[in-house]
Image (tube, rainbow, N blue to C red; front, side, top):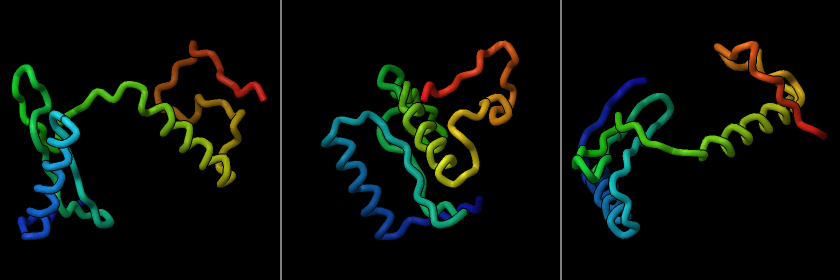
Amino acid sequence: MSHAQTTTPDTARFTARLDSLRTHYHVPGPSYVVLRGDSILLQGGLGFADLQTFAPATPATNYRIASLTKPIAATILLQLQEAGQLAINDPIKPLILGYEDYYRQVRYPG
């Protein structure tokens, strides 16, 4: 992925607007990236990733996202089923690198 970030009036307006929204919605510190194809047009962080240590948010900040990945994974699986690339009752083991034999097979009851 190539990286060609430069500061322009447009990127400055975008960053200022994002920071305004961050403040309005009381978000401590988002990270952001704007892509065009495989090129990074703009990336950065605003505010703080950790309010106790005042560590700044950066493009490399790791965030705890709790259970937000479950609906994303479900959507991806259903899209793959619609595309005919898997069936909802296919075993998951071949799809996940490092999946151990001792995990039980999960199947949709329908």
